[in-house]
Length: 480
Image (cartoon, rainbow, N blue to C red):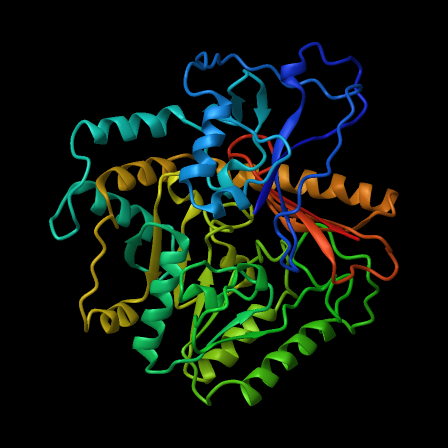
């Protein structure tokens, strides 16, 4: 994906005194049609940039490799994909991070609204998390879960306590793609069925198996992958064919008119009808699983009609399938109202996958399921060398110990949503504001009446640590 640093310009009472401390955030451009790697055309003006909040932390002076040498090595030795997804006009060279701040090699300070793809959940080099990592590094770097060691068991007990019954059995992985890959395998083993359904526009990983779950052409290759994976229409109540002003569980609704009678949602019924079409035409009578994020992330911070997941889970279970909540982005309090995104839909999935914010940027993921499904998986032998690594577990445990993140996501997110909605009402270019807590989307359109077109660029995942009074996840979609 193409990541850029983006300045947010606006009126202020004073001019910026330090050109290295302009209010600058890190964001990402995403074109759902597949042209992910467009050069940034963002142009900045020097005057009237808001002044950065003060910061008492002083980064170390940069004394390492030159920018020219880094780019030379990047071009010569790194896979071309590395250059493709970082194709800047002027690349950003990051040197150091502290909490919500980043510094580049020239000493410029940035307010990090990207957080390493919505992953640094409690702050860069958070003192308590760093202390936990250092303490474990002095004791035991690595062994394997063949053996019994305290950090693994301390963490799994803590994590299980955050989830409702019967979701109490945990398998630790190293990434979200790996967790979803494993969840798909578990679902097929447990049900004895093969077909898996996801939502169009979704992203669930880039491994050979999860590439099938991912319903977005930009992330696919012309090779056999994801056999048995199917998709149904994304129930997007703003950009989709059906939706109204009372569909979403959000402080902000769409500007589309709603003529639904009290207590019913025509849009939800229509999207469920599309799912029934998939059942009738594309899969066997018995299926393995249904995957969905509680709020779609890469696909556009999309919120579904309020009862969509509840109705979908019922239909999937009637056909022998298990329901899997991908909480890689929505988990750990990000949506504000609940610790897990699925709780906001009043459902309990059969499996939950998670990663990203689980360990504040340290590689880690997890699959949580029921004892019954876990028992089916134990019929064979599956081994993960690094899953449950002692350092990863110590860091993740420290992240769980951070209090207040969910409440701040709720309070700050609600304020931000309502203020962004005022901008939507004021400016014709803003078609939609959506989200919950600090997972927020803003969609910009060329024609507010007609809504979005199929050709759009999304500025997505502007994210900072959730315990800070800042944006944790905001996505802006620009429709041309």
